[in-house]
Length: 117
Length: 161
Image (cartoon, rainbow over all chains, first blue to last red; front, side, top):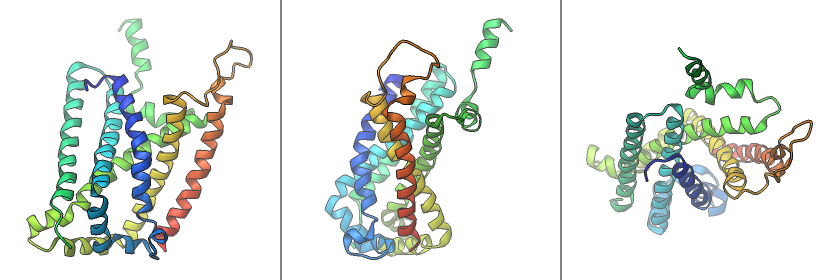
């Protein structure tokens, strides 16, 4: 992706569509009554969280990738509105990809190397 | 400085003035502008939270590498800290940001990406009210604010009880 304004906004819309389902599900994970629990703390126990990772870790990982891209791409779009210039644009684009790759790698590590409960 | 440069400078409001200032100055009778600024502020809050959240959810992995402890014991320790009031208030603020950003994002998807609810183009006639201001997207915008507050109250019940 060259970082053109039209591409940046197009990817915002595509990732937003994906986020409706993925983030919607993730938020429902924290609604205790759906899971027969009574408090949000019970949805954050090691056992409950580990079960989530083993059952639908792929969905959580996909959510991390899509949310990271959407959020960082939004910041990139705003920063590119601030000022223009080849060096500035390249710097913002490179920083965007570095932060995205680092945090996507951490998210991947979470699912791939999660210790057994 | 030439006239062209002066005009360019005048229109170059900069990031904060173009983002924040319209909230205070140009939102009168313009809920779309209010939603625009809320969308940006909530987006900033969410991306800041997301980066911290990824590090937090990876704690069962990195705590083993750094502190040589059982990863899930460290997780439980972290959750006990986050059960405090300060973190609850923080979660409530983030919940508010997400619960505005998502419904408003759906409205933007419908109106900007799919092009529905924005009315039809027509000849300008007095009093020159833009067609989009009387189209369905304006109703959806009011619905976004209502849904946001309702869901935020619901989230508050979950977080604080």
